[in-house]
Length: 105
Image 1 (cartoon, one colour):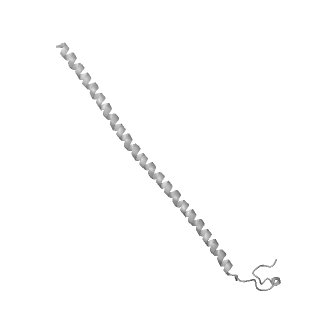
Image 2 (cartoon, rainbow, N blue to C red):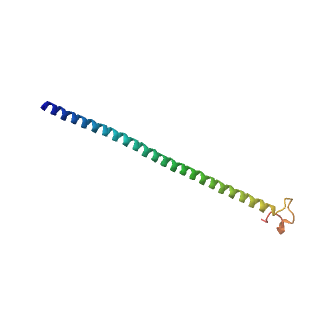
Image 3 (cartoon, rainbow, N blue to C red):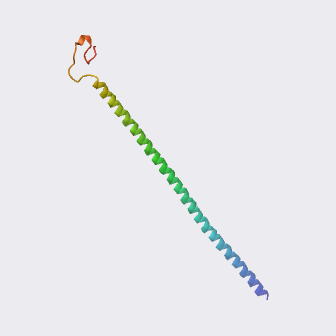
């Protein structure tokens, strides 16, 4: 009778240890899945932030490019307007009276 009790106790201990091992393995699997989900979400956030930064850099470079093109166009327009104030033909008037399109020296 004593042997049966000892065997039952040993069997109960082995079953408890096996249950503990199974629970630890399940916990590790759950933690791994949670870690992967968290890492995946974190990676998505990082990728979205990087995409937003790249888009902002591209947009700002296009704005600067448009700014410089507008300055160049307006400068060219001002030069053409200033040239159109004078005749394109030969200089008229006398050089000593400064009626020429070239200023007196």
